[in-house]
Length: 267
Image (cartoon, rainbow, N blue to C red; front, side, top):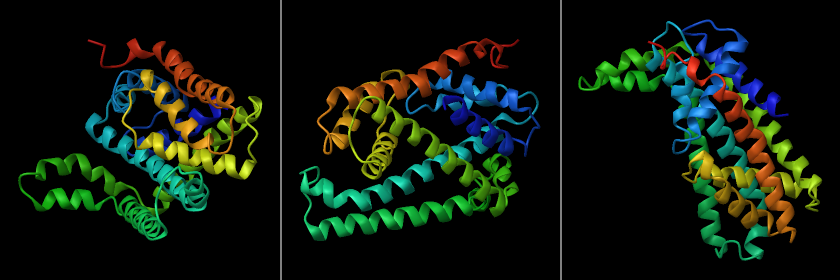
């Protein structure tokens, strides 16, 4: 499922970067794996953008970074929406276990805030071209329009397709985690497990990390959430570590085979 996970991401990036340069699916896969390798040494994987765009030949690489950020925004939005949904459905259970010590009124305010943030982010994603218009209105930032203007090339239909691919990928790596929990005998019903996984991904997204050192944070968050429903600490940690190895370490090793072929290293 690792290859399915990253194939979906490479297909999504190829579709989006096609606004600037037509590339093959193999080139896109090489860019994705190279990006993972570079991102392993940068906070919150920001180096992934550079690792990808330097696999391109002729297009404006700053515009390519803008498009890549847009694709990441779709994945972030997916994580926030499903993580928020998980919080909505689990907040009474986790309150009852002293996960949060919030009274009913405060919980309602948090739920309302989560709802408003998600609505705002959805509107921003599907109206992303307003960023280009925004920079054009202020002369000091007008030079940025030549880079952000590429955002106007995406129709709502195309953005919806990108968003659907992000959702599909989200469920692939959620299913990976769910399978691993079963393999390591973490006996939680599927409904609760899936919601807990969504909550873990939400907390991971909101926590600043470096990929090579994030395993400790991943393990802590997984124990914090899944530990409410299971005492199998070894199983929870094992599932988390194996998922990290499958989806990050192995792809980073694969990407290292391509890293010195990036245009960044070529004379």
